[in-house]
Image (cartoon, rainbow, N blue to C red; front, side):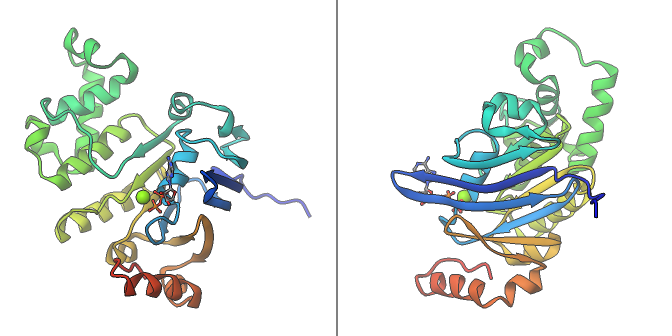
Length: 259
Ligand code: ADP
Ligand code: MG
């Protein structure tokens, strides 16, 4: 019987990556549907950030398949080419232009490669103004548009950086531990923001905070020693014996337990 299933937006199959003989990623498989919000959890060192490095071309796999959309082989492209395909990544620590205003930060990102110089020597176009307003509305920073980005709270800087990625209209958004260092209220707003983006973008969120995971997660993938240990709803993965074991083992050593 022929399948009418749409192709996955992102496919990782049999992906392996070693560093000095240590397998950080080991025969990893991951399949993402267009528009889905996928949460990845796993203990420290499980390979979560390395997985993002592999998708974004920062690191090359030793073997395995990484495909985007209709058969685009990401392992043959460099970081810049991968970003241009519409794959945006947010690192754990916010990196915004602290001496520019919030609005200028979005503008700079909107201009992309043409960057700072083109913004210094030209005016904001009406279409850009509308788009910036739209992004600031999405991230809840309209009333901070003229603040220096450096004056924002940690949480607001994280939202601004998400906004800078949104300005580039990514198809796939990779977000590494967005709630780290946030207050509870900021964490909850971040969850609402990510939920509002799902459907319009495909989103991968790496997260430790299980309250936050529960707020946003539809499907959770548990990574352990570079492989997929378990996948399903939050309830499903939290009741999985192997997942409990992985996290209980960490708990005894004083690590934050996610499940
Ligand atoms: P996580 O994000 O799940 O905490 P990482 O992906 O950062 O885990 O790391 C997985 C393992 O790979 C760790 O043991 C880490 O030290 C190692 N690793 C990651 N990147 C590199 C690198 N560029 N060089 C050497 N080892 C690395
Ligand atoms: Mg990490």
